Image 1 (cartoon, helix red, strand yellow):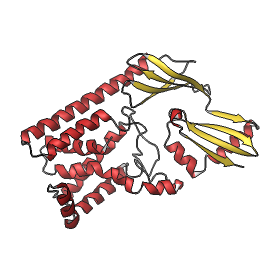
Image 2: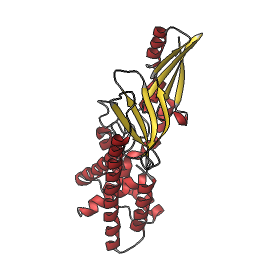
Image 3: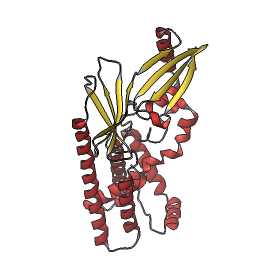
Image 4: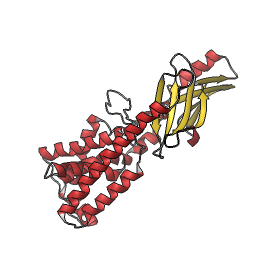
Length: 310
């Protein structure tokens, strides 16, 4: 989800329960996305790919540490005063046991919202690198972001408190409604799409088009995968493809598999696979083995990486 939505959602919830620390909760909601300040680490050093946007800070443990540190910095008098002058509003926040819990609540709402989006987040890091995702929203949903921006403007200008509450509560209702529609539509995709070659596993991923989904089907007993786009409004299949997860060219098949196994240990490959939906491999021999990894869902966006191994 976008930064504005991450601010408005905890603020609205805390307004609903009549909390005195709405601002601390909202700041907790945006704190995790300041991982963009350290994302260069994962770019320069592939072995630390977890240090990236929607990486290390987007877990229960490091989310707590990040949000508390964020609150501590913003509660310092010099920082607080500077930001207040810039935004021309009083940004008075406190660092207490209560506000620490509140800011972590905001961080938890952030984790939940990002869990709803595509590719997901590593909630259990450092115990697991697995990303968890409901795959209901694209990473940035323009409709939700525009609504959140409108609510933020209502909060910023000095309007009647009653109008602020109406805006906040309306936003929560619409957000829940949109989520319910997305969940229903995804289930409808599962019931509508035709299964090919007796595929038993079907996965649908959201796209920027709310009516279009990227669908991957496979049968565990077969090696081929079926990949296509499905428009749930028009009930039509687009870009239908049958893809082999592993292909070996110009060399012995076993040697190609060994080359892929060696390439899998490279940090840049691990980073690419961690940021992909479904990663397939092409191994081609030409004096050395060149292994190309590509994301079968994002293949139209040139999502691939090629490495050389002996």
